[in-house]
Image (cartoon, rainbow, N blue to C red; front, top):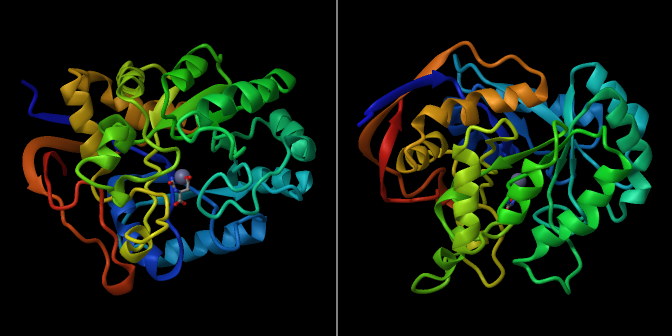
Length: 344
Ligand code: NCD
Ligand code: ZN
């Protein structure tokens, strides 16, 4: 039995760091676990311009604990009014790593999202020319579509037609939750990849209703049936280059989760690398963990993998039941439970 593994330091290819006091509370966790992270732009108001991204990046750097080596990779939030020249210049100047597509009203803070892909074609065409990745929240927004079908419907109705129209566009289908997405990404060729969260590898939809409603397990895309979780585990632990780590760690203060209409988002940043390691261990695939956590992502983004190494050990440790204080305290995934792998 392997009790310890050493891998290149991982990166998180999808995280919500928020802003202000919440960012100050959660950022140290991400920066401890990861060398780099793709930072989601769904602030209020969203990050849409080079100036917004530069200012947000400066706030992140200012909030970093001293001596921590962490690089935020910034994204722009695509709106119906995004300017192709601004996006192009942001990428060329090294400020904007990627652009995020939220279909309007698909999830938390997506009211400014895209209402019709036709309106943003000039931006997407420009991105395809320069190889700038489009990061996609892949859920259909038609309220008539069942919440558990929204990812699969998005792939057939929106994503596939877009990719046929613009095959050179590099796309990351974010936080995939279905066997349908796994199959689509597997046959999508070199311009398509997907991130997979730790929580979608661990819970299925039953967990959300186990013994009562569990608001801290509610996120979007929502966890699906067991067969989908198993497909995600197969994809992640296969080592295949299209699949890589993206936590979608999304902190919400406890009162905004434990309420009549609770926010979507699961906070995993306090133990993400350990949670993934546990999954790879359970699948007998620790030898594939470095590819998923530290190699496939940089490869897709055209960045070098990190030079420094981290070690994980098989060791029981208690997950805290609160992160942050007062009104902003967050309940982390696996709050108060014992985890079986520990990051050093
Ligand atoms: C995210 C958030 O809270 O910003 N929520 C979530 O459930 N994942 C938004 C998102 O990525 O959908
Ligand atoms: Zn997200």
